[in-house]
Image 1 (cartoon, rainbow, N blue to C red):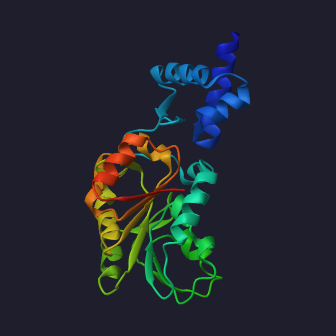
Image 2: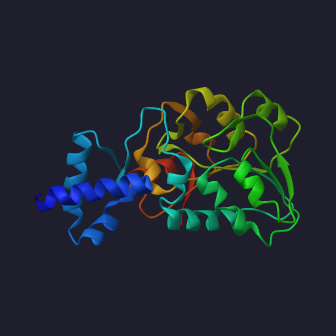
Image 3: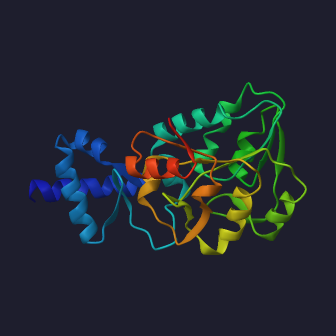
Length: 252
């Protein structure tokens, strides 16, 4: 087998194992240049084996589907940790915040330790469990369980929010562009929109790979985003455009 073909087999195995990979990480692993890896990924995308995204590649999925949650949890873990730490600095003592389900928002929880008087509202089973041993007041929104995501959604979720006063909402994103946040699932869009619109301050936590995605439904326009926290890999032109539209973009 030619060296390039053998390398592509191993690259594909890495993508399938981790859900997504970075060009630079692959280049270091295989001892080749980033441009060589980019050519490999482009070739593999043309043959339908994977999907190119900004800075790397991910498992090819059907339109509107996301990689499984356990796969996403290990992807860009370092970036997610830095983003979560930056987000925690925006949380004020004594406030009521909403944290929607997602692997990036879940990373926020340990960085909140030490805050006082917080009330945390969430539709995520995993975040609820992570909060079990904290001193915070926790309000769990009702709804139907989305098994793969371990999150609650639907009309009951929306009704649960009606009598709550939320100071700030923290959410992740399936996709992100200069026009705002996009979602992966049309059927769940109403719940997602209700969650991100629950407070006057919307903070989006999204690593730079999310700029390479475009979901089938718009969840929040750029004008609705108060703050976006991302990492240094975010495309500069997109960042400039979001800032021009009034979004406070923090590079973690």
